[in-house]
Image 1 (spheres, rainbow, N blue to C red):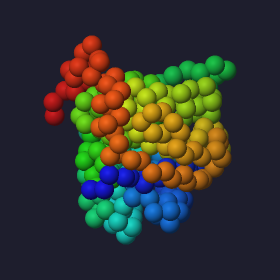
Image 2: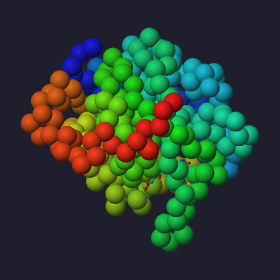
Image 3: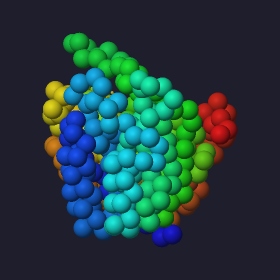
Length: 284
Ligand SMILES: O=C(O)CNC(=O)[C@H](CS)NC(=O)CCC(=O)C(=O)O
């Protein structure tokens, strides 16, 4: 395991058709690989941004099979990279809801981790814009951190960014690089996105790799974009434009420097509840 990870965020504007979205994702991954990235992260809902109710359910896959998961495994193996599918709709026990799962594949194409989004975006914004993610998706139960050849990754998805206790649990599990594949709305993204991403990096002394959907979707939705790579001091190392459409940004993350930074600036050990709140790290 090297001490430097070259990370890439792939910004997308996904539609409802899986095949076109996988093609778009493949182009972004190719561009990242040309820049020698060894960790490539795709945004939330990269394979399907539904146009109508039911679109996402229709492309939901059984755990371990299906074209979206085959694409991720094959592409990771073909390029020899650690590849993260920001979220993939996976069938669960409920017939009318899927799980939004962040899937991590290693350079040999084996799946290393699955994290199901815990916090669902059921909100009303000003001027009538509203979201009820829980109509289509069922929430997951626990935070997940995984050791990969590209470092120890702490997993989260989009709206999780607003729940700092989730990232505390990840850092307590040893995370070095926090992933936040997203599809922030244009409205909330303009107000909150970069602040939230940088705050999670700063308070946890972790790198953040946060690709977003970014543009105008066939569904009529507008997403924020501004895919970000931030270092453990909260500085932006790479960024895609706001709402700028498909794009890729790459930066080197020196994981080897983390222990010294955390020793010199020991905010994590100054916590009044070291180890965090046990409710955030249930077993299993
Ligand atoms: O609706 C879809 O098509 C796909 N789902 C998403 O894009 C998800 C759930 S609606 N988006 C978010 O979680 C945005 C969070 C956000 O924007 C914030 O926290 O401000």
